[in-house]
Image (cartoon, rainbow, N blue to C red; front, side, top):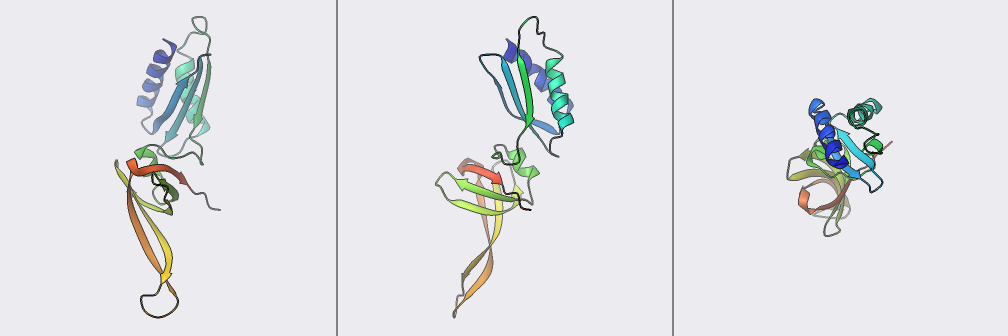
Length: 154
């Protein structure tokens, strides 16, 4: 009952703030509600407070005791939804496929089904000695991605 009511309140809040979206929500056996959100423009502390209030102020602690934690998907959290890829276009990702192949490149495009990565690589010259820098690209289906993370560079 608590989980269903919390989910309904969360959905109402997210309908109000269409720039925010749910990554994960869990309710533990001890009624510990944990909500992880992300946003098309990032997530501010005020956004977490908005979601927290929308849930907490509409649940009755007299009826059922609970704890509530609302947090944003961390900068180093793996990307899990197409919407997260879209908001990170232009950033560098490290992608590991289900086959274990690791690719690091700039996210050029993202659709509901796949992403396009581009990167520079040093390869032997076709003729003669030495190496030449070439631009490589790969389209990777989201279903083939085991894990994808944004690489933060300073």
